[in-house]
Length: 174
Image (cartoon, rainbow, N blue to C red; front, side, top):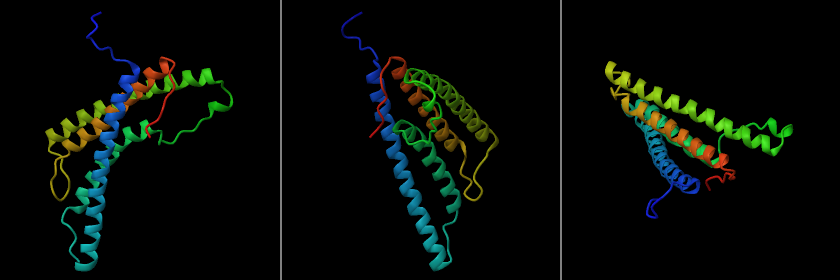
């Protein structure tokens, strides 16, 4: 092997995943701020002037979908998802490690399937002209955000699977 060819190591792979997940989480945070601003403005206009933002509900729902789709990979990598450890009381650390490896592999496959189905459903939504109620915003981009978020979380789980398979311990995003 040539010395100038770089090999993807588990450490390099998880660093790339961490940088990507942090950036995606930051984008999701900005969309959440926009959603908050929209909601406060809509409520204020409705309360004080009896003039809500036309289509505010459409935009809020679609922004919320974007926030959730971008937050799931970040939350998963940061260890923020709810987990119940029932096997920890009866199984040893070696068994738990292999259970973690298997769970990450199965969950990654399931999320890849969800990402693929979201992508296909987005194409169907575009083909059939599905749009939001008031503003007639096409659903395709929002299906694609969902496909991206689930696909990224699938990659997070693959990277964690690879680390655990190599005998490394997982460190969470800080």
